[in-house]
Length: 198
Image (cartoon, rainbow, N blue to C red; front, side, top):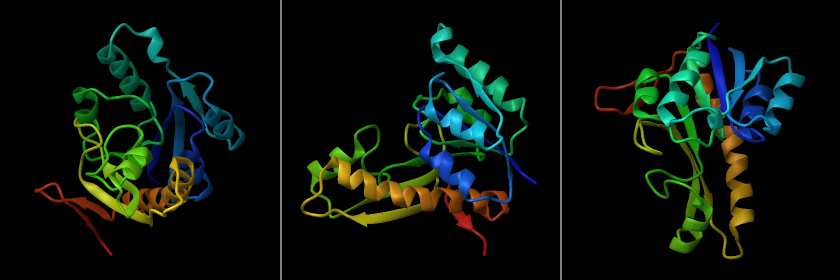
């Protein structure tokens, strides 16, 4: 059975969705860079080992990522899952997990990278918004796309209502993508595109 490690910074609602999905894998650990992350309590309540590695204890991003890598690798994961982990990762870190680290971003990439994606979507006047699961690369919110889900942008939407509708899709889409990985059904082609078997 494949093992995954999930990284969070806050309540970890996507982590919770992964736990509730009862995927055919073992969640070896939930790790946070924030000691007070609410998601840690949820993980413990579900019998999942947790760890905290605060970025404030390190002088540089490189030093932190090296220590985080060592911590993660101690669990020997087949897949690292970013679930609201609010850190920009170094190139060395992303290279180490090439092809075995997933992220979910609240937009239809390549549109609206970075923060405040729902505000960006509303300001741009798009009619569709959504979320994207992708393999992580050194470039922020970039990498081979695994799957996407779209929601309509309604005339009465504000940031909060649009975010809530996208989050419902995130909680559906992310477990599906992780399931494909742990069932060996995700394949990255030489051109960087992702092929789903079956």
